[in-house]
Image 1 (cartoon, one colour):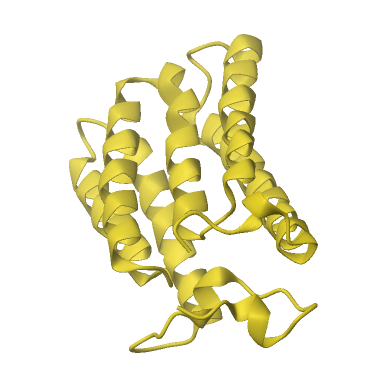
Image 2 (cartoon, rainbow, N blue to C red):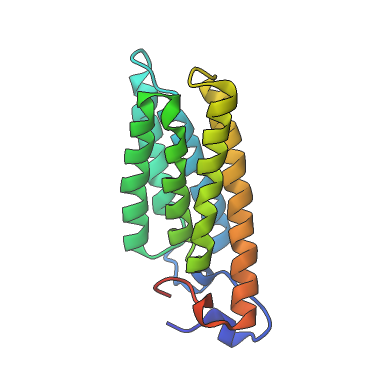
Length: 179
């Protein structure tokens, strides 16, 4: 596959922007897929014994979100399966919110970020552990997940900035994993 940066030297493009899409544009699929994945994850982790239908709906939305994201198919399938499994595991209690580093690492994989950015998976895990230490394991789920989501979004933007810098510098490790 052609390197998108080679077509326009000095200008950075998302690695997934060069993928041929059967429908939609890369930005619209990123927005729709990301929104569905996050919304579905929120529904999954809020599920109780009385709201299992919301959990099932959340799982469907979450998997659909991963399927819509512009990326290679194998990455999306892996991400959807492992991410749903992670969020379902978090139903065991808020003390497992630190596992949110897994869906974030899968996001980096799907977005084809360079390997150096995977150290940022420590951000949502660390924020989750810090929040648990401050607020305790019985903290409100929505509050806890909002804090962790905000930290993951910030880390995702940092990963993008690192990817841009690495790609422009042309350093040996700057290519996305399996580009």
